[in-house]
Image (cartoon, rainbow, N blue to C red; front, side):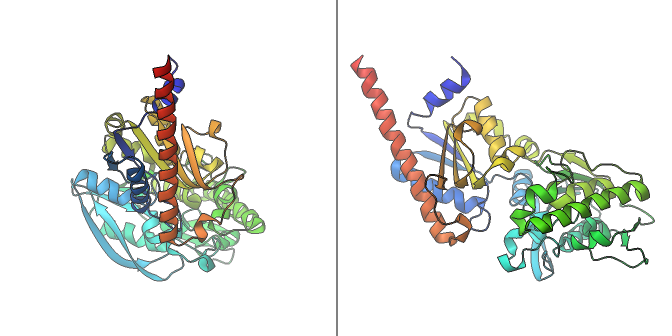
Length: 400
């Protein structure tokens, strides 16, 4: 029997064990809050079902928690600044080996911390995350894992590089603003006398290049508050950065997979920190023994705020759906909105709060409590309809 057909047949049975692993619903619900809402709806439809909640991350929000907890490491927290230079607290972690630091860009420089009025990728930067990196280096960490995702910036990682001594100068030899707008003034890069000796690993599931039609500004700039004119300026700035890096540092990584992650921070970490890129989902998959976890359940449920064409470019929910299909387990997705037909997704069923056929208020405009209640109802409705489908199939079999 073909794998896809079997997966769809299994999905009509009432499951006994369900793995619930959604990503965040950006701006309203964390991964944990979304999982709890989905679980509540499923339990109303399927009393007695056994559930496992798992924090899904592709290197963005939740990356630090998953990596540290799975390794039985410990968390640290410091005072720093967010992407709009406001004071904040951010946590990072040490793995159980005591010398590997885990830093998530979303902790200090995430878009979720900013109100809509402050979401401007020409003005935001990653200086707050740079402070986390310098602290980990001062404490003697020899390996630093940097999870990318959920960022508020589009500046190619220059503010991270400034934290370890790089200087970015204009044509008059003055320091440029370390943000997306500042890239337009960049004329020269001066590296530090000595680079950190620690090994850096970039964890991201985004495969996009630095610039161009699939680059950081065009693909992800609008999600961060950029209009079409700003997207064009940001893309031009990233092209300028790549050109000057080639000339001054002899590095050419603009087209490497993941260079466009987190507004170009993937690129910045590769060229300024000599970082090695690793697929964030695969990193979590290996550490958390995710294959065994999927096999131990009858149904896998994931989701995110908006499932669109960018979701298929390596984001965690799509990768989890593909893994479930590979392991012959049905996968459902609950989303705030869906902009793709079911056939183009890796899921057996998809349910959304807002679709083209049934438009509703933008999910990000809802309060967290209201969003959670609507997500709970969505889960209940889909599970209830599956009850009816399963009952109809049993009735047809009994009639034969």
